[in-house]
Amino acid sequence: MHRSLEIEERRIVTDDGIELYVRRQYDPETVDEIPIVCCNGVGVSTFFWAFVQRDFSPKRPVIVWDYRGHGQSDFPPDLDQLTMDRNAKDLLTVLDALNVKKAVLMGHSMGCQVILEFDRRYPSRVAALVPMLGTHGRPIHTFFDQPVISLIGFRILHKVVMSFHERLNKNSKALFCSPYLAPVVAKGARFFNIIDGRLMPQSLLLDYLHHLGNLDQRVFVKMVEKMAFHSVEDHLPNIKVPVLVVAATRDYFTPLWLSEEMADRIPEAELLIIPEGSHAAQVEQPELVSLRLKDFFRRLPSTLAVESSKPEEKTTSEAEVSEEQIPA
Image 1 (cartoon, rainbow, N blue to C red):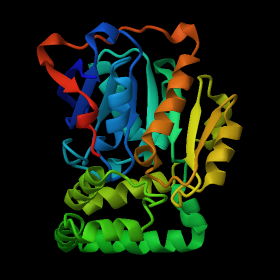
Image 2: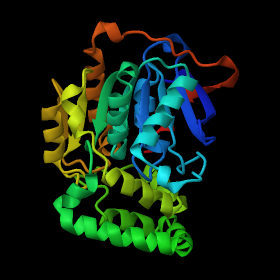
Image 3: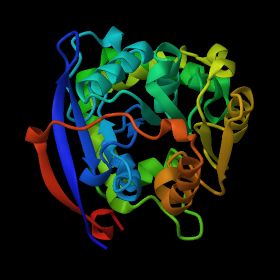
């Protein structure tokens, strides 16, 4: 079934002059519903939310955006500003520019830290939280459940990238943009799983690897550095909004026990465990994720029903949304 939706694309200027790419998809009939705002993982762009856009934009607006230095957003002049605090402040800028008073915040991987930090700073702007396949902080310390090896490995990687970034940027582009080598590299890194024929859609995988290959590697390691020592653990018991934590049994980047622990520390948080899912489980098993999200949204308190978030008409264009839009 085809459904006529609107797509609004904008470049929003931050307080320090950075332009952030933002895309909102919505049905004009439901534009006043509280939107879903999606926050990416480090090194990832907006394509990982294709299924969320497909399944939910007919019911409520879905907003995706790129962090500074990622996707279609500007390269940051100061790499030391690639912090979770800065990402949360940029998210506030996005909401203000779109006149969104309150939103359901959905984060993947590092995006979990961004939305949890945002809730700590601006709780009145949050309707609900959906942290997916990520943790509340210090992810390098639990990476592959090998804290010492992971920390040493990252410190070496950081030093190499910052010293030889020009050569590495060139080589990473050749590696990650190769349709032959890139999937082998990603599988070897255990970013995704092949279980019973289920796999991240090939086109999304190539989009991810192409984005990673074109990303300045200094942006990647600097943002990883900042998230590695950021934590909102102390805030978890103070979260007042409904929360659905999404985890996966084969997520080697965010071990399952860590998501279970986070859900236990957040008052009345719910937990979805995706069987045989990897760190990319939301695009490996989108039907399961969407089904659970629909149930979660259906049970949100009625007090969250409406906040004005009507977009400016001059920037909209029409889009046809159907199954064909989503990579097979």
